[in-house]
Image 1 (cartoon, rainbow, N blue to C red):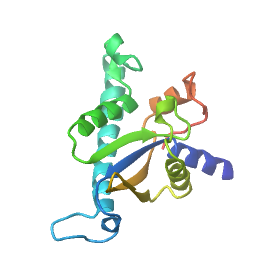
Image 2 (image 1 turned 60 degrees about the horizontal axis):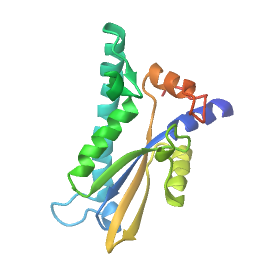
Image 3 (image 1 turned 135 degrees about the horizontal axis):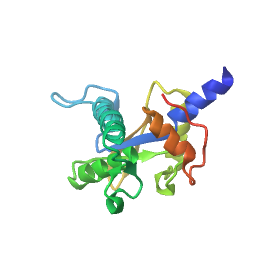
Image 4 (image 1 turned 45 degrees about the vertical axis):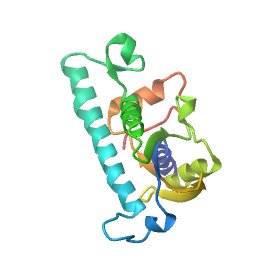
Length: 183
């Protein structure tokens, strides 16, 4: 039981999303001004959309096109004229959103990243990844002040939704972990 729980927690902490919101930390937990959404609630909405899009892309685009017309998702998708991997799909989406200067950023983050750029960039992010692994049902949130603005941060788990996600990560030569499981 403990071993399977460890695998479950390891999978949960495998890929994470972090959000930065330019809102006051009190807005994270209180209703805020009339017409404004608390930062945590906004993060939940955005996370739900990102999670749904990645699930649909992984299950209905990558898996189906791979099975029906042999169109694969590969790491070198631009050069090989293939589909981006689900993680790359999220990163491309993130770049588009980030370029709009809306005051929100998100990215994938992991304690065991295949791409070292996707590791935690601070002690707080590392702590967030560990805390969410301990309590996967709730995001880990904190606020920091930077350049006179208060930034709201949230770490959410990202589960492997398909067999191919697990196979890719377990078989990748740069993967620091080889025992991930689906869901």
